[in-house]
Length: 80
Image 1 (cartoon, one colour):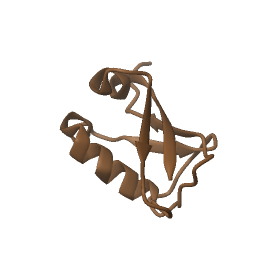
Image 2 (cartoon, one colour; image 1 turned 45 degrees about the vertical axis):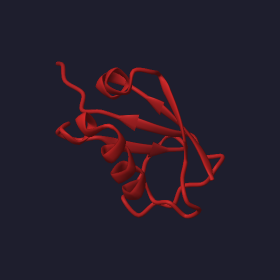
Image 3 (cartoon, rainbow, N blue to C red; image 1 turned 135 degrees about the horizontal axis):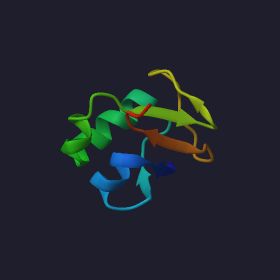
Image 4 (cartoon, helix red, strand yellow; image 1 turned 90 degrees about the vertical axis):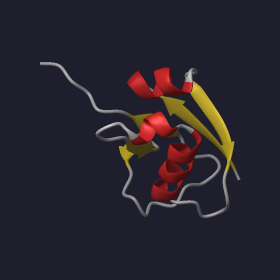
């Protein structure tokens, strides 16, 4: 399946673009997506946290992804 992923903050800087398109196996989970992205972009694995949002809600690790989902990577946020 084909996934479109929106990138924010430092994740966008690491990847070097605001969106990413990848092919993933059917039934890929949010955890599996992160594992694949960590392998492709090792600097993402160095972040203290990296959340996956699916259809505007934070996704649990076992959340299955679907081709038409709105997927976003949300890095740690600092500020006050």
